[in-house]
Length: 245
Length: 58
Image (cartoon, rainbow over all chains, first blue to last red; front, top):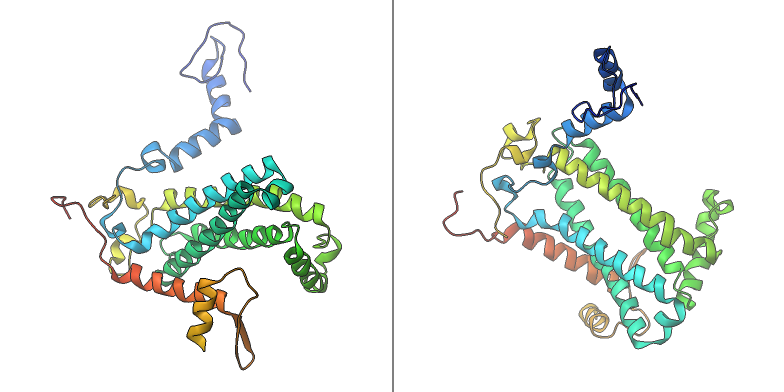
């Protein structure tokens, strides 16, 4: 961080710099990691690309809605999970409202995987890694795998005979990989913490990166439009029409 | 038999699971139902026309 000798403010420079030799200070400021990160972020994600109000015409297809349906399902998974965490196991096992929210949590997860798998099929057959979208595809794959682990630890956290049966069945498989020494599916406390802290954070972060990559590269065009498939600019910059709402 | 098992799984999700066997393949009727539903929704998403606002430029 560069701090100058005078007390004046220089909002344009983004930092307090000295009167004399300010060119040198500006150059120093421009090399700082905060400035470089800011310039890089502004270049990769200008506001019109981060929150576009138009999309290319080929997006007007039902196959493009499953990604956002997956996100909506994830939102409800997190909301209902937070309610369950607030109220505790006796509430979700014994009260009718707790059972209802518990069911909402389960069916949100079912919807999440239902839509995510269809999203995966659609993107696979579109070869959605085309046009420098490898990271978009990779983050989607990783988020899928982490989601499977999240759901699995959720089954282990039910505190019923079902979770006991699943954990005792799973332990041999996990132990066979060697991971059982560090990741013990019979350890309820460990599995619960993974389910409500570590894995949800992982899913949200990776899903966020996935969305950022979609914003960065745009949605993948169909095969019929090869010119757009190799476009470097985001799809939102080649607007033809908005999809209907 | 298969249809009956599928309908039973659709109607009663609170009982013991129904499983289908085909050689070395074993799958619960509930899981098979979900997979078939996903395939149906996927095909419909490809085939059904997406609604557009009237008067908007294509």
